[in-house]
Length: 247
Image 1: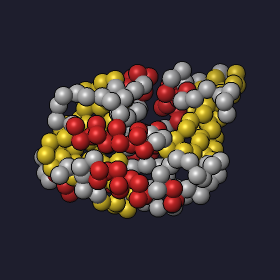
Image 2: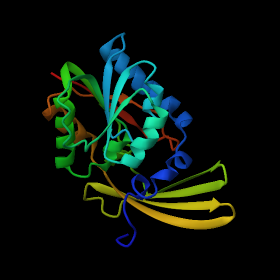
Image 3: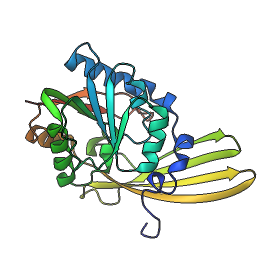
């Protein structure tokens, strides 16, 4: 995959995001996040920080209940989230290193946590979460895959239409080396714009860790640890919301 550029969906192909992912499809997922936040925080319009907000699709279902601040490394993705979540403060930053010098009631990281590919990445990210939380604050994250539920290679696809563009994509997730801490994702985008068809390729490298590693590193960062069932995946694999409370 060395000849295919990485992470194009967050860079030169960020304009494709609304064609790739519909905010309406996140309603089921967001309900689990809302319930977990409410369980730990109780009633009220608590202030949450989302790291790696991406296009803001999951967050768009939470802003009716919570005040939010959002951080992402990609300006192209923040542009989409600003449009979708106009009342949210959006800031550029890397979840491993950003420091806003503010405290929040909760820090959440949706599937962007998958881009942490080493234990050092996860430790740095969990330290960022802890640094932005009030005592007793809540941290929630949800990797798409953990080592125990990755049964690849896996293939998924979808299509959509917007204006003069007919769009389809194919996703191929694979793990060529079960002994390391990554899996890879190859994306093929087919863009038919006013009858002119072109194909773009995109390559992503993502983290893959056992559940025990998630628990150990979250606890080492100063949190309690709870794994809540998160039955949102179309292939019915076991999903988890990892929930921590800062001690």
